[in-house]
Image (cartoon, rainbow, N blue to C red; front, side, top):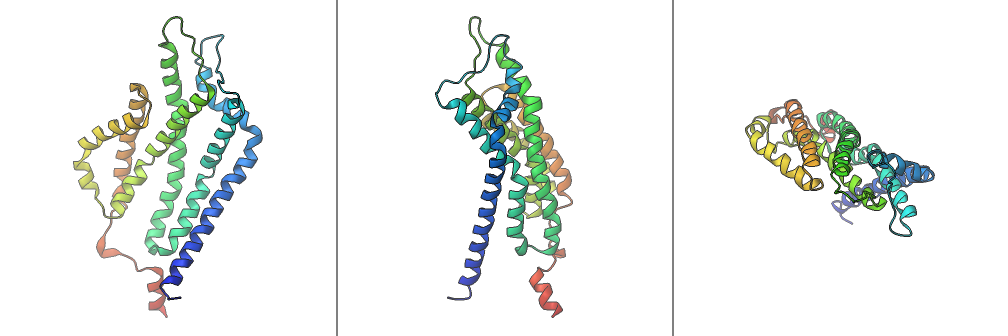
Length: 254
């Protein structure tokens, strides 16, 4: 076996170990939460239940839906709960190949990625859901009883959770673009009008077809882009001040 193949196999083995640890973490959280699956669904359903007309409730149209839907939600919640550990595993995998100064810069980004993802989900649950569901239930035609299927509701809210969670990662994405040298803060400022149009287009694509959820996603995306643009100046690449990688520093000291 050649020397070039040995590092490749070593990296693949390391990647497999990291992936197995990530899957094990998700399963561990799932096993811990599965007993509370119905309670978790009750919590997620509360924004809609609080807006339903008196005397109405959610329904299950399939025989297995009352069992499968809470289990599905618990699995997704387990993934969301394990995100900090998943990001740590990704960080641990790429850290050996980074410069020393890059390690100091990347770690805050990894931590902020998890915080921003959770912030996006919280924004969707506490701000967007009450407004959207209040609007939907109040505009039902006369004679129509609002009785949402629990599986359809879960698909709807998971879509919004994921959309807002990813959208709140915009500051991290903006900083990474400047840090890797793909662009710079000045260039991004010049593209501000296109960004404003772009966030509304993305909001239209990622959310259900109603103007409320689209606007409630687009405006925070714009604000977060401005936040990322502000912090990007601290991460802007400077070609003349690169640190030597760890192995080079070791060779120089030997």
